[in-house]
Image (cartoon, rainbow, N blue to C red; front, side, top):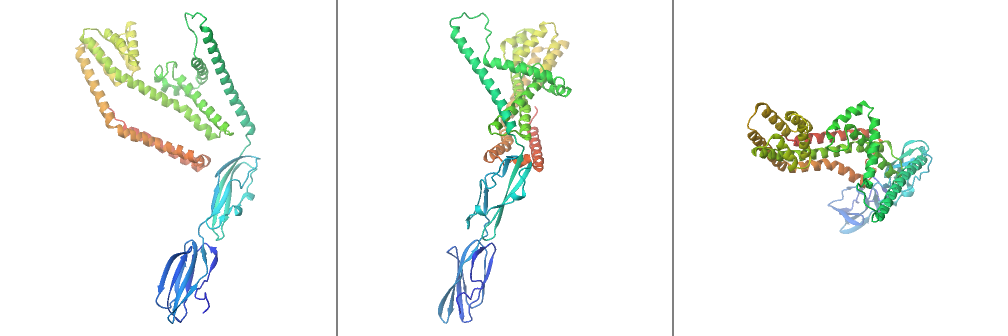
Length: 501
């Protein structure tokens, strides 16, 4: 019997990407046999057969195989080796520098630049890469899908798609934007140097001059702030003609003389929000200009919205701190008034004592209260105006008590002692509740921040990861749904965590 005739497939040196089924058919003189399968030149499997029946073998994994058969014929052992069987089911890998490429209309594009292909068995396959570039027109605007494909010797095929976005030529527009931004920065730097020079000159000659009685000199920050408020006034005059913005500004009236003492009404706050929005856009445009790019539509919208609504967070935090300070100091004010009543002083004298003993916002409010009473306003009306300025439950208790005592009379010391005990117990309960819910609040804050931090980290690692959310209609829909779910989640958690006392 000739060597190799016992194998239905003697060898397959050219690699294939499918299973290899072969049969071992020993001769009629064979009493028994066993075979050994070597994979990648290492023993992989062996099998002993007690007769001369055929053996069916399936080779299914990637690798190089060889089969050795040992036959026992008339007490002698005969060795038969097969050829080499090669199986390659590993697809090649295509590597590209960027899956989203932006090019200007009319510019040249190196299709093979930064593209590589390799295979575990065949090695470098970059020279065998094929593309559909002939079917694409890079001279027209729009998104082009450039497909790279490569196949190895076994027939495994891999494809990779690169989105090429052809945009209008922005070289001239970019140069104009760069020039304007550089000019503005140059003017700002020049003004700063001039101011610094004048300050240095003033310091040098000040030792030889007599100090004026009234020092009207202004710091650099003061001058910049004055220019800002002057510009803000112009913006306010422009938006004052819009009815919608005037209605919208009413919600900011409560911040007047609390968050910012310079602003006169809610329109000033709205004007500052508009200025801040355009400042955010300017910063974004400047950062993109440094990268020799122009802002896209969605890249303008995001900083515009962020700049418009970020001040709301600042205002809300400042107002919350103000209210917290008032609530904490109000108990002290009532204690001072109660002690004043115990020593035989009147309501007006008790109010005056609060203005001298305390400082901060509560002192300012009681100074206004004291001034209104001295100007002829009744005590009841003065306290009602205090309640309007400070819409707090504690102030309502105080106003109601003073009004009732003025109308019906009564023991003012007992009433104020009762108010003092009530507010003290309420404050104590708030502190206990805050300590009990502290861990839950920390967890909720972490859960609020995790999605944002995750998006930031992913963007740092791969700047193009979230691009489909802004460049495709489905991505925009999913982005809107995610934002709505996130906002609803925050509102829902805040509602659960909020406990009214």
